[in-house]
Image 1: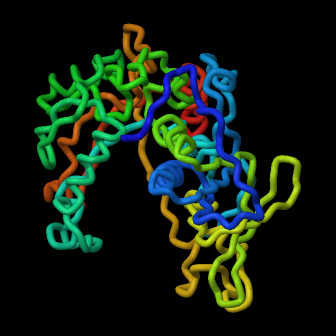
Image 2: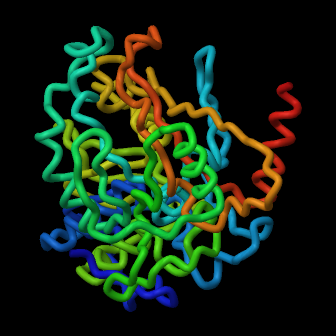
Image 3: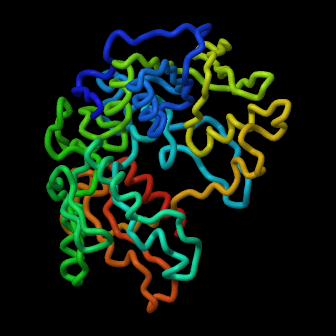
Length: 381
């Protein structure tokens, strides 16, 4: 299991420093949800690893504050131009910048797919079946839920019944509203997760204190992010994390094999890290951008782009937000954002005249974010 840090600690000291002239085994670009795990696993296996991160190495005590307006900038807001008729906006809704990446500001909602999600063509005549089944993935769901770990209720009404390593979180105000409303309408619901937020202490990580700043960076370390759960252990095992290091080009040898990564540091200076292998894990925008920018002889249209589809067909998750007015005060943020939900409408119902379904869950915006949502909604009306 990964080594975990307490709330007052971010970096174990000292961190091993590898010379750029030294050829490392792996250079990882991006230390987010995927890169943060990879750097830990490879370092534990004894490989020499350097991981490049364009953003800062967050100090949870210094950089994050319990103030919505004053919370440090966690998101990737660099200008990126996307094509198509429905271009994708980047920012707080879908991208992170800094060690931990988007896992620093995600809502930590961790539901499983249903078995039917893997057979949509067979069962509903749309899309395509997966080449694997839910049952192939189930052991890995269980491993991941223990490693992070996950807190939540016994999951029995929908999909594959299962439990969670930690019990559910207490019901917050918005969750109470959802559960009470569903109960009155005869709709099954659950509360308290599943979320990658501790409901009890785990190792040297404390339990959630319900401060409401899950999306602004969990200052106490109760919410899982690779910044807290994997990167410190990677450093303990000899990996080096280079923050403020923006990868600009992947270099190839004459025989077509990679030999390193060019990057730009915080002062705008160019560097080159030699490496036997390169892993690009820079999110759905930055990964294709870097590969396209690494075009060279023999790869005129970018690396890993023999199909010509690199950077195309990107689809973001869409969700509708419904707000209501109540007589009593509802403090939306005094619980994990996604801590009560219903999947009663998840599966295909032929009476609805469309394939597949949807889930209903709570969200927990802080006051300023909630006010902005309401202003935007009023403008749309």
